Length: 352
Image 1 (cartoon, rainbow, N blue to C red):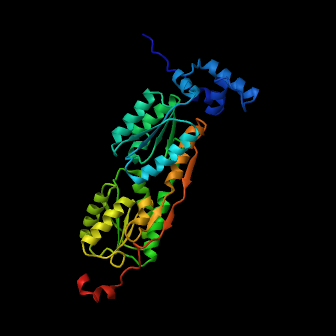
Image 2: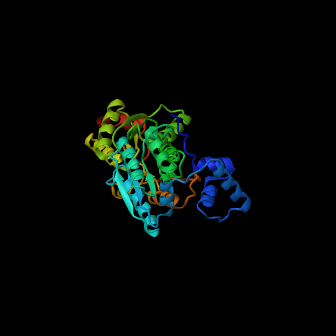
Image 3: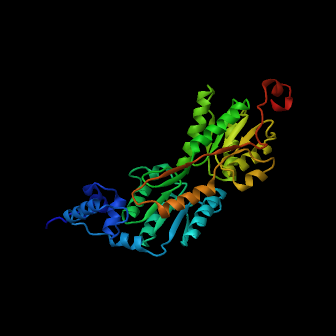
């Protein structure tokens, strides 16, 4: 029995014709907008040579009057994801699109299952945020699922490291650098980091930025403890960190919810913020300004990122891979202050 030849794809036609996928798509769908007669002829000749047959699923998606969009987040109860979803929903409303919010609860298998389900339902676009670094690497399960979705005409936009898809992302590494620079400028030399789950890409970006500045300053590496991105996770990680290095004078939590847990634990240990221990967060969720003294943190434009990702999913050309990187901002409130000097600790018998 003779093997069946693989069906030619739009990418094959575009490559043979020497044009972009967007141009090939416009010609083969009957639109010649912004396409010269010469290029149109090249595309049609290439399609004939390859015996190209349009994917009916992709064409149905492209012609849908009001296709739905799925936004995949970890937890809608987390203010970080809630702000991102708000921005995405606002843009979707402007385009009169129905949006489905899918929560993975940090289970990588759920991400893949959701994308597969969206593919089966012929959803127009999928937005993904907060994913694992491994899943989005070439050959990763999520990367494969997203590529299969895209090959069938679906649109994809990421809010975590662009990996072959349009993306709107915060400068997490730059934010990590800002945090380290702030604490070092205050005289802190014994630093700790309460980090989120190891598999989350943003955790490593923030840690890398922080660690680079610490190394450049010639300081001993910060003690890093990983835990859940929750208040309880922050408290548990802070307890472990202070047990490992009791003389820590500053702690960076890699999200604001964890920072709340750190503040609670530091208080339970009988230490004052910021005179004994400075505490920083990351994200600047709405609650951050109202936490006790007001939390020093790194602000991310979360709503703007969600809005940009939705706009990319709905308007970017199929073969374009725009990457929008949003700057972070240091927001100094009252949970950070100058490091205690050795003499001030020695003069206080209760701090030995």
